[in-house]
Image 1 (cartoon, rainbow, N blue to C red):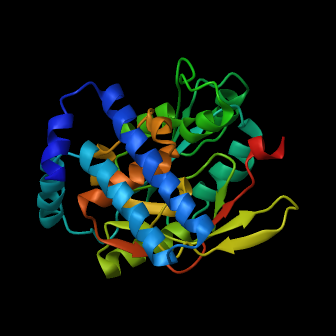
Image 2: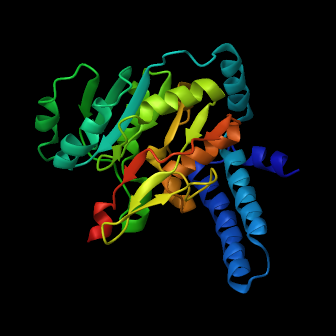
Length: 293
């Protein structure tokens, strides 16, 4: 019955749909907080409520035809032996970190069959000039004519900042697998080699892994990312098959009070890929600049 009701909602204007589902999600989240604060249930119940919330939201957004399309594509496209990997990076006025940390950690990978797509979010600093000095045929750079239009509230802006350049990068990707890297983060030098081998042996469609996280004192701890859930995956800790470029990021994700990356990942999860966790940390996730202020 619930699925039938959601189908009737789809033709309504997208903004109204988002607000309607968003209110229902907010109500569920309030229930979750109340349960947590008063110890009325176990962690398993909380996880179940969150999973039901995600399924409700994704079912309203993802057409069943898209689910069928993925499984048909997967049956006809086994994982190749030496796939091309597309690394997509969105950047905005972080020229030094981009060219000194992010880009080298990709181009110096032990796995060389890759392309690096860097898209500027209307950069106004020296990013185009500095990236232009890197002479590697695997690197492509595009700077959008203007920056994306984001919410004024800092937290809501954080949730969706960088979505237009990331979607542009996804549209340019030619690889069999796609992955990402924030412009101030870096990979371990063998990340792609290990994930390509893991994808081949497990025949996985979507992989996530633990990552190193920097705290306020500059110390590093490992985020184990034990499950595929909000707070356990980040933009740069995933590796997935090219079909999922058909599911772009949503600039309205902040209406759900969701980070844009998780908003996309939960929709991908709804499609039904073979999800696998790679056990080793392969990413250094630096404390974000906005958090240092």
